[in-house]
Image (cartoon, rainbow, N blue to C red; front, side):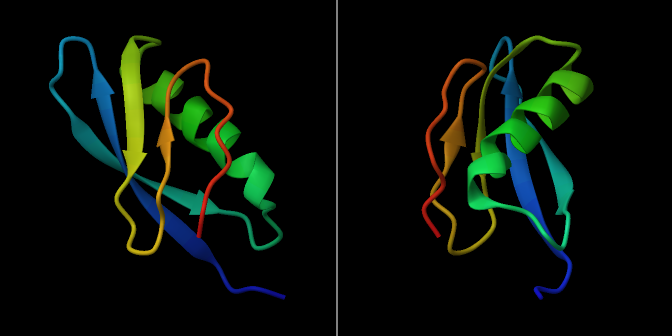
Length: 74
């Protein structure tokens, strides 16, 4: 069982002014669920207007767009 993890994510809404959010991952999260969690948080914090979100947490290489389904690479 994994401990609680969180991701620091930079959300870039229109027009290109970004902000960071912290997303707490459930202890039983699945890697394939992470893009959807990021999309949901970006939608909620930007009012539905965002271009992309990039994970800033060390060891992650993930950029999510509103339509993308790219898998995370840890």
